[in-house]
Length: 338
Image (cartoon, rainbow, N blue to C red; front, side):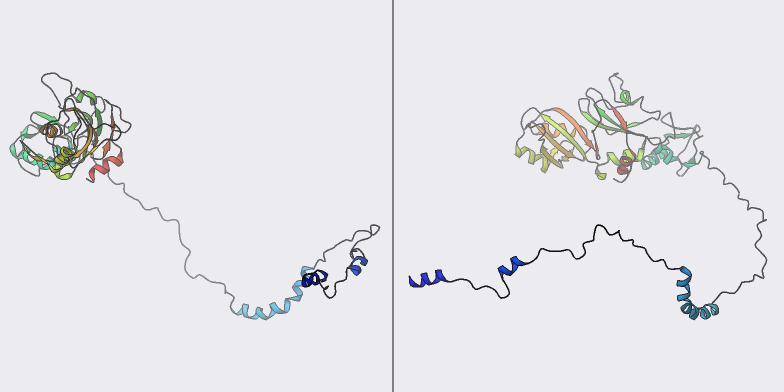
């Protein structure tokens, strides 16, 4: 207890040089540079240096380099040769002859460009004697023709036209054929006013099948897209009469033996957009007749709706049912790269 009382009486020693009384006696801060109001404001004038005086100041330095500069100064050049003459006549350039549009090409290429078939198939037609040129049957390979020649196949004249690629969103109730003896509605009636060139469907869709169908007069392109070896991918939305089981979906992926051979789907999945176990999306490369319907029928399912939503990378985007459009340059180049 005594120690505590002693601590209470203890005072902190003041620092050396600190005096509170002296601090209070200090005079208020006075501005040493406070200007008297009566005094006139100072004028600050910048001293101008005469440029000539400045030049004289450095004249000695320049003189040191003047001699060196004279040594390396260029002498006046003299030209002994005659000046260039510009009175020559301009050189005459002969105009290139314009390319003729009546250029000769091979007969098989002419037939392929008309959209009938590919070049290899055209060689078979020529060898069989089914092709005539200007009324004469031609069976020799390598014959060249021009646009002025009359080339006929199966009694019908072929025309050498520019390549046309047209995509149709086929509606239900139209058959894929050029002409129907029963006078049913054909897909050609949907594209007859689209272009002047004669175009042909690439592959086919059943009468009750809807979706994408490509038309062109490019025989080589038709051959490429219809042959399974080129891998033209086709995607369908399939609506069944009953929900499909996972075991049956796996069976379709593994493959099914049909009357015309073994076939399988590349992929099959439920379509989340419909949220229905009866609707599936299938992908395949086979081009056999009614292949999708026959594969489901082999497992006891009946296809109520079949819609092709993609063909060789082409889609139905912004293409209403029953309408058609021309392919873009980018799409054409993509098909040629397949």
